[in-house]
Length: 145
Ligand code: ADP
Ligand code: MG
Image 1 (cartoon, rainbow, N blue to C red):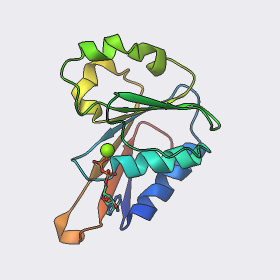
Image 2: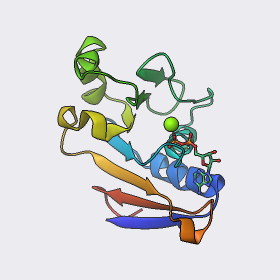
Image 3: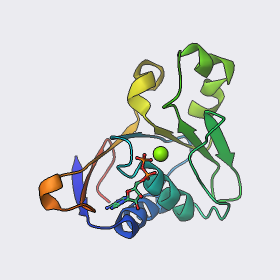
């Protein structure tokens, strides 16, 4: 397990970018943490690290957004609004999870049972005592970065 402290969105973005520069085909990254903690900022940094230049936002009307203009495809899931894991079946999630690209899942805890164990777990937390822009980022399931 590795922990990082960041004090700005840019720092979180940079950390994620660095991670993505070493990402390997087929990896799954889960992102957990409260609303507004920085999961999408982290995703944007990872996209940049993969060389993706298209703008990355949280998919609003779809569960998954696919970006293909980088070194590896990025499958960005935000499952916050999912009502029933059946919806994951309908979009054919396993083609993404077991595909050659990088899967990144915001709110992964909501569909935990569908995600293979060999995922890389990223947890982002605030600590009000350490300031408004402070975040603790915990990464589990990968070698030292
Ligand atoms: P989530 O996807 O987890 O709901 P977002 O990434 O959309 O959250 O939003 C995170 C918000 O927190 C942004 O407005 C961002 O500017 C702000 N922020 C402040 N400090 C940080 C930090 N250290 N890391 C990431 N985001 C931060
Ligand atoms: Mg988000």
